[in-house]
Length: 305
Image (cartoon, rainbow, N blue to C red; front, side, top):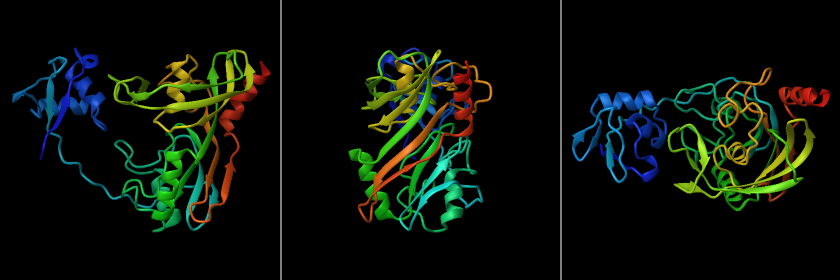
């Protein structure tokens, strides 16, 4: 098995090795990184490194990762709110708390497990065993519309629309603070956070182009109701962009206030609209779904102030 090599950048210098490895290696936590260090799986120039070692700019670290154990993704009878379905695609209104596909810490109980039960063998294989049919993702604690492909032709067609922005996704959210303008655009690259692998950040280092358009729906004391349209689809894009301009989303304990909001599960962010060209017929399909109950309750409290 070939080791994974990581070169330390100037930004990453002076970090503890377990923190550095957790930030740079997808799916590796600090405790898992510490275990790899204890097992002698982390070296530099042939020398085994320990947890107390601090990173230095320009250094090349070799990591011998264990082979991943594959687990079978099984169908599970999980309720789905189906908004649209035909022989090519299915669109569901995902609730807060439902993970899209199996991942470390979430081996089952996901949207993929539910889709396998609902659709049987009728899902595109392009996403692989863990992500059959999945064209795009929504965060676990974000609700709303998500589309899946039932065959490879549909999957390729929808993926092309994601790339050229003809597949339009609209979100609504409650953002902390007041906006002076009625609309605007956030154009800022997004990449992995240098020290926290679970977070993304606005950065020019190992980043990807990201654009979010926003407009004000309503203003309340200290909170603004926004409608956002994604031009690109980066991980946590709306959450990162709004936090970057000083307006994190209400209830977002990762990018905003660490203290949870009473009566609110996750962040107040909902994928309210989805528009795409049907991959077989070319017909424009425009779908929408109502705001979830928690979002509506939060709005009711704001209106009553």
